[in-house]
Length: 483
Ligand SMILES: Cc1ncc(COP(=O)(O)O)c(C=O)c1O
Image (cartoon, rainbow, N blue to C red; front, side, top):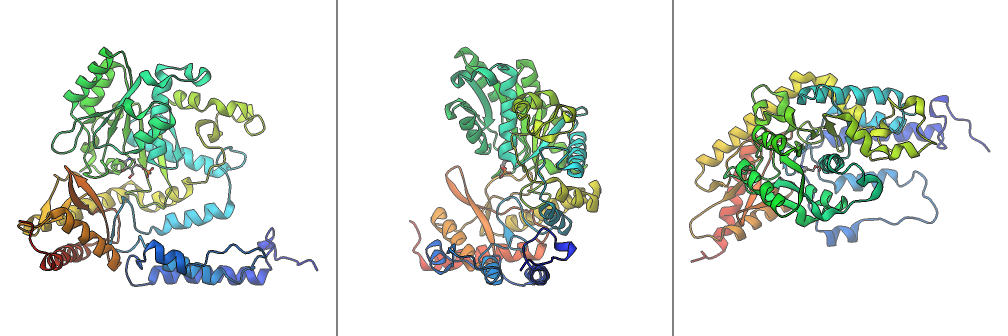
């Protein structure tokens, strides 16, 4: 017997009463998840979780029966990134407007490639890109939302390659002569891009940094000269604004002068640090960004928009259009009349999710001033954490701080710092109360908490540091000193 659906649920094969129930259940689950007190994660090793998890894909569908239980199990074993103890990667927190945007974008399930299929979303993305270009200082710029800084860096390098070899896209590339330059603190996605683009890891030249972790312009000049003497073709410099570990900002003015003298494309990886541009107090960290050729900037990092949401911005939009000219071949999708408005012609993706709505709704809620306040409050919290670290004889700051990354370690005379700090992190993460990353600076293991989560407060920072010190003391009580 065919079921007559309520008009509001037309198109779904699920009976209206079940739909009602499911939507109510979803609403309830979201609310109770957000209201729940507790830890960041119920930590459980892979070997144990893979044993307890019910992951069977049934031959005969279970209908909606198992949805309730499956969601509960999923939420139970997921990391709760909106808890104040979450200071792990470069994002976190919960933003209600952006969350609503995410849900609504999924509800309409449009794809961003043509205006015809995503009319309003196209306008929204264009408005966002225009505003972000203005903030960077690309008055005639354009760009696209991408899956993240990794794709943004790849697009930047692709544009740079097009500039030195516009015919390569048709004829193919011979990568061994092209070289690009990055700081030794740059993100690994530059290597990934070199792999994808056929440049080769060996042709990504790591330029020495100063003691703060910023690319040294004098060393950049030397490396460019050396490569020319070796018969190589320098095609791109990727500067970083906000390095992953230390949060350092490369000196963009000096680097851009070198790039313009040498006629080399400058791409700025501002995936992490780009949001400083909202704040008049901190914008100077990116002085000179307007002189770059392209920039990537993640809204899914410090701006707290749910993953994924990232912008690639370019000063000469025509170059982006050229590297994406594969779109011209898709006659079944792109019609000539809509050439100027179809976003699929300036993207490497075909089907593409709408990442614009969530950023748009969050921006409408906060305004530029709200973003500035958010970034400034993060910097104040990072100052506070730095002061606490400097005042505690059992904590050591392992790198100067420019942004909201703190590179720290537990210290005590005679201990094996690496062993102790590694096990501090393991214990803290296993306790489920806090999450922080581990990294290495000059072969020393460090902990790298970051502030990028609006739930973090002075109190949670203090509890985190107390936990580090308390755990460290507990560990060293049980192991004999090194010497
Ligand atoms: C400096 C920097 N660039 C690029 C990326 C990659 O960004 P995404 O994860 O958005 O691809 C990261 C990620 O942490 C980063 O720290």
